[in-house]
Length: 114
Ligand SMILES: [Zn+2]
Image 1 (tube, rainbow, N blue to C red):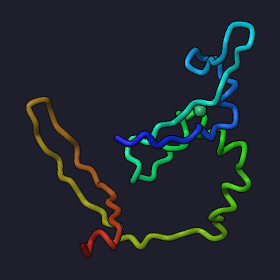
Image 2 (image 1 turned 180 degrees about the vertical axis):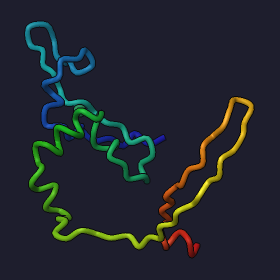
Image 3 (image 1 turned 135 degrees about the vertical axis):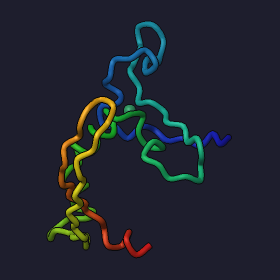
């Protein structure tokens, strides 16, 4: 197991009042940013940079403009689909009758061809 690590990138990680963040000696204590261990050093994961959801979302909120600027969405994307109406007839079960109904089925065209 690798001991590769980074400091949590959460901008307020060092302000959260939990015992595991307390460092220092009596009279000179601090709350310190958590260290995040890379469990698999060859795998890129957000959990290599953030100690939890709160710090991840704090980071996104704090840097939202820059974050969105990395890959702006200026136009909508589209996924080709096929829409089918599937009719299910009335059926009898032990517990009673399931009425007939029509289901709308949406299939991605790239899935249909695979
Ligand atoms: Zn954190």
